[in-house]
Image: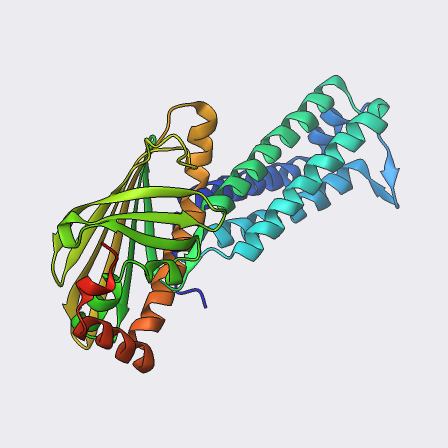
Length: 320
């Protein structure tokens, strides 16, 4: 179930521009179809009993309907990923049809017509490409995850509310080894040394890549933070700096959980593009992590198990 959507601005902007362009194009086709037909076609023709002027009038009506649909999709509070995909496919179809007509029916067009059809296809192709990018960075999920980009810097803030008590939430949040059980991009988390503010842990992803993280903040019962050693030779991601913070706040009837990740991408054009595209999958990872965490926090059996660990000495449960 989708309850939250963020980072929708690129897709919304592309759809809005596409809708306005389609509406304007449709209006022009309807208002002066005779002039447009004369500009585009080398000589008058008819198709299925319709003159070229009538075909452009009908095309104008279709563009008005399409533009209204695209603009309506863009202005919705929550953008439908399915409708955005359909619009993008239709745009791609327009581009392909235009190229086919220009290549296989080159004698049909005037020089001006060739430029107009080709230029229009280029504009619509740009809309399709921007919409694909917007879909790639769009986040939709059960929890509120906001992504803010500034050049090569990305800040992700993920928030969720659970009915579990703050004490229970802290027990689960501060159980380092169990972090891998709720983060589906990780296969293992192990504490290398220390406890609390002196903790250093090692994370291994599902592909077997590992990295170390050092604690930079520890507020017992409320918050902790880690710095990822991205400067390690075998660090697998195009990230120059990565800091994560996990905290909780009591709210009426439960606890609010917040995760904040501040990421700086490595320099380079390709790395910058990859880094921007990471916003959506990273947001989805945060969403699933919070969902999985809340399931553990609100599970009675799991709560009893964690309570037993806490009572037997949490420090003793960790490797030295």
